[in-house]
Image (cartoon, rainbow, N blue to C red; front, top):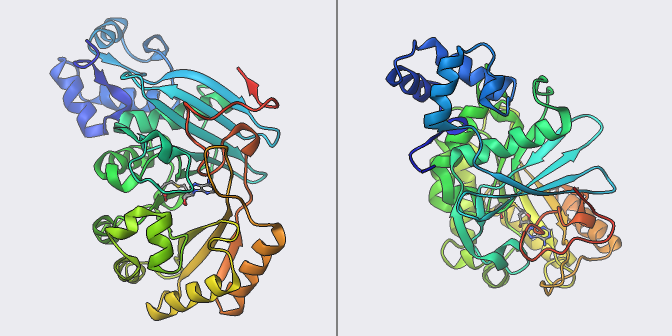
Length: 363
Ligand code: SAH
């Protein structure tokens, strides 16, 4: 039944306009609907108090506001919140809300599970379950904001979004970009592209396509190894597009940056695997070879889990890796893990297998 029901949060303004007109309503109702859903973030049709009652009833017969079913919430000691949902088809979706002093970051999922098989990532163990629809992506953000701030409140200025939850965003490209354009709308969530970052394992044709977009989010590429032999082993996607192809695409992307813009490589640090000074030097020389001088490297010490064979390097090794990169003129930052006590940190999203540690609060 729900298949024929329109899922409203995943519709753009023009789509909503055609939809309301087909129901015999004036076009301006689309804007009222859009604002209610994305600006006030209402949770039910009754809350659209600016719409006639009859229209609200009509709407509830042909459309729905929510498809994700909220299954659980865990709150970390550091304030990070991890939400678990089920899609209508019963697949898990995870979203992480990360507060910092200045601004919030919401880390959302683009797929349920993941097909990529990166050896150090827990989500990979789930395999691929489904692409999320634009509405399922947008709903994650609305849910997190409502959980923290309550419906009807203004979306805080400066909220950042990162497509760094479960899944490979560039393998769900159209849905992802549609969700992004809905969230960009000034009359809605108004989260501008500059505050959104998409992280990819390196789907080369998509990076090239993405380079051509005029208004687009920031890009992060997960590299995690400075040579093909190692990257083949850690990230099997490297056998499809190797480092040469990936770096050539990154160079094309770099050319498309506007003045002052930079982009990011993520590098998961795995103890005794890819974290030596030699690896840092190799990485810097790869960047030089492709003239990638507008990049920064985010170093992510590995977040471990029982099902994974890797560990995080000591803080001394992490620091030494960073210094070795800086000595070669490469900007590097260490990403502080957030919410790892509740399995909310990078690479720990695997709904069905992640155990809930004792300290986590389940609501
Ligand atoms: N599939 C995309 C989006 C996920 S982003 C991508 O890989 O870019 C998740 C980030 O966390 C990626 O940079 C990934 O390499 C990293 N990651 C995966 N498993 C991790 C783990 N166990 N510890 C730390 N980082 C991890």
